[in-house]
Image 1 (cartoon, rainbow over the protein chains, first blue to last red):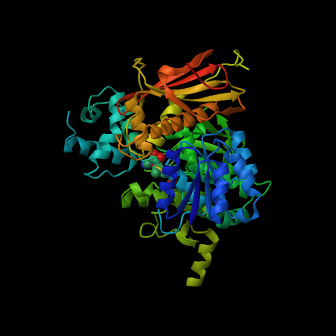
Image 2 (cartoon, each protein chain N blue to C red; image 1 turned 90 degrees about the vertical axis):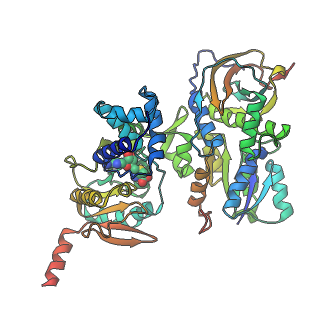
Image 3 (cartoon, helix red, strand yellow; image 1 turned 120 degrees about the vertical axis):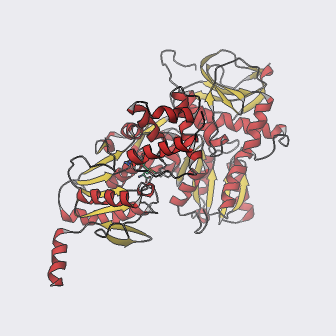
Length: 127
Length: 280
Length: 160
Ligand SMILES: C[S@@+](CC[C@H](N)C(=O)[O-])C[C@H]1O[C@@H](n2cnc3c(N)ncnc32)[C@H](O)[C@@H]1O
């Protein structure tokens, strides 16, 4: 499985990368939405999963979701917001824009894994 | 005061008597870490001195200690499969059996994630015009208070509640999320100790008895399953935790395999008669 | 725009701070975090995020150098003496961001959250703001002061 972690905090990227690596994911990283689009284009690969922060410089996570949903080759990629934005209306907006799931920061490891299980994105035999 | 083996034994006895839960020697660390906050809150320097005070202390203190020692771990749609079994197998059967509201009991509901998950499942799966009632019960007053409030913090919400369900069935209430009135009106809560005689109640179509039998001894398990069977409609359904089974404990429930899990069924009145006829 | 003074905001900072510390910094272990009395102990660093929109204000978390290293060392899973100044800024900034987002969700909406800013407290000023509430978290023997400020220019803190 291939994942991409998009967050402007290096600490957060390290935490999420470690978590995905434990689930046997290969992990790409980007510090904002624009960088993520570039990484996707230059690697030419379609991740199974993107973990997307909301507030980032240059291009926000919401803008990234909107952009990436326009690219037909990226359709199979599951988009999960992982952000501190937690108003009811914000979650509705992200889902309407095409995000599949939403995890509110602060999260625990179990919280992320529960959501990935819900999406069928925890490989069998890994816990 | 030290937590001596005698004091540990006293606490273990108390928890067994009042909750049916078995605390074997070796669980001293659990008792120590769980009771520390209670000791602090009740003005005892050590857990040992709290345990000692229990002998002469009030019933309220004993309840507080028992509640602190129960395990309340829970999450939304826990293990997921029981909830698909509810939609795919159980509901079609119950809906064809009668026209009354579907009655479901969440028999050790902890902080409420299980009964609210059931309510969300019913909202989605029930055909228009059919109603449902869910009763949640637990030993712990604190868990019941939280279940009744129907409020969950961010960390609890993150534990497996799909985002679409969150925005449909919950609204913000300060730093927490609160279940909307539309689902709350179908839920009621009551304190029930599964290890004692059950209060009188109307029968249920489905009972969730999940992740609580594991704490009980075989005799207690048998007695609890027997009681639960008494409040199920004929042909009613029982759902247990992933590590629990009626097999070897209660031979009356029928085990029905559904996907990778199993659910259990009380005998249907007429079906049993058919069996008896063919036996002759 | 400044906040309508007639709207009283109720923010349970204790509860929010407790959740953030227990999920992010306690790594599942049962470490105690508690709201501590405000001793006015000197703080070295402040991380803040600004809220702009229906609510105008700042969420600030400040602590000592040692405390900021503790946070960075947990978030980056490194020894405290291995973390760089950059790591400290990143980690403390993310802490302010997470606290800020959760606080924003209980305030009048819609508002936007700025990116976090971290600097030495001696140089940080939030002119024209009033303190709405604060809580002091004590974690691993170090105090962390979490403050919600209302009002002030929306272009974040001004260096002096
Ligand atoms: C691990 S939780 C299970 C919650 C939920 N059913 C689930 O599967 O996620 C166990 C619950 O059983 C309750 N409990 C323990 N002993 C009990 C008893 N004797 N009668 C009723 N409830 C009991 C505890 O208070 C706790 O909330």
